[in-house]
Length: 264
Length: 286
Image (cartoon, rainbow over all chains, first blue to last red; front, side, top):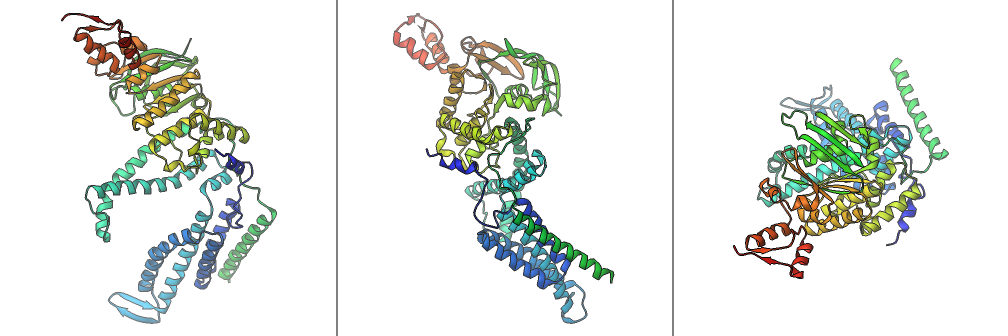
């Protein structure tokens, strides 16, 4: 067997993509600044602008497909729902039409667009972060910042649990299918198939958590020595630090501006 | 000299009325292979948890009696340090993978990272263990997508890489097919050859007969028998207690009942074949 692949561990991890290669802590910082800025600006043009920006960033990071495959679900599930609720029930003076208890006005539509832009902007920033940052890199960066090994592992395994639950659910559903239970079709049929498996799924996850923690103990997880790392991330460059600081300053400027406007 | 000593140890799990282990007294020495057998719910896994320090440090419960590991009281022992000396492999191959590493290579290295092993040494060690366990072809695979047998071998590799001297192995083949079982026993055999101390819980008594120096038999939380593997495994009384005996022992009994007497009770298939081949067989009229 060729062991050339082990050379990758001798150097800090790089993908060659500027966005992906940002330090996870820089990404967290940028995610918070960009994702929260629409809440300060309170303008849905700005919020939707951010949404477009995140889509462009995902394309630049080479993860447009995986980003958008999740993002459109958020868009459909939360975006449309929130917009409809807000547009239908938020108060407004310029009424466009009324039907039973529903009253759609220019103001309610704007309010709907506003809240949708906020939710989409923040969820876009979060999904982009998740899609461009492997969780092991994130926890590595956290540990380097002094976060305990235990906390970083909890974060890492929590994300893994989501994948495990999905896989286990698939296995159970396939078993159900093999028993002749209908698992596909309309929403009601799917719900009927899914609800009974939720209990075993969760119980299974709880029992495997105990075994997993024993397995981690067997791997000297809490050994009282300074841990080493097989994969390491590069040091944060001055340029990267400067970009993050610039965004932070812009965010502080926005917050200050909002406070000043509020006081006036 | 005894490395692990138990004196009248009784343990009850939290919220349970009946103890899982009752009045266990025994001692285990370094460099020996101990086979642990017995009926289901007999206390074998609890015994392993005790040896590994998970009782009383992970499972609280009620622990009575005295137990020492290398002269240190189990109640005072630092389990984090113990984990660096005693490897533990258990039955479920699906929960022994950390799930947080992308390749088998990284999975095996996880324990070494926790031990603070320098990177170059870590890489060398993982390669060495992968070669030893013949899992090189798996190194770049996703550990979460391996079969049960492959996962179990990776779990072994991860623990072996940590260079423990003592291995507590709890039914490693219970969820594996015959081929997977064979591969796991190849690894266990290799560990024995290296002079490691092995405490193996296993229902496949024929394999225990082949490898173990001593056997411990558990029943309803009590240590029914402990002693030299040949003596214990040829004791037909164990059948009355629901404990399986090696096929060779059963065959010898059947032959004897039919008037064919072997010069001694064989405990392994090879031994049985050898005796029959030599033709050193006596005949008794019924």
